[in-house]
Length: 146
Image (cartoon, rainbow, N blue to C red):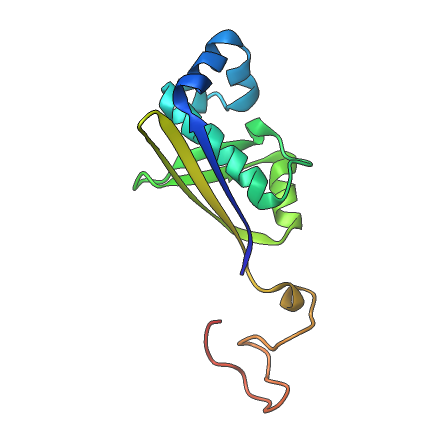
């Protein structure tokens, strides 16, 4: 079940000027590995982190350098979360974070979907039966994925 979505758009030139004006900004926003990337990639990663904060519903307990965008072998971007940021995501019952990023025409954008493993009623032990639990009306399991 989708529990949050977030999107962000960054003007790459403006972002690059901010990095030049404030030399310590990159260290506050990005991990050591991320800082090796070119400005357009940093702008996309900044957009991804902002979109994640929006998908989470706020920034309480979230720290920029505890969010790293790492590529899978295929090149697909993925969040690597640590510290209190990982704790916040777990406390919200989020099982999967979907991330899409792009940069073109002087802009970088990112879109995040936060998904729980089940609906909130099932996580609290109330509500409908799962595939493993018998249906209250028939006593049979649902036999398939939701």
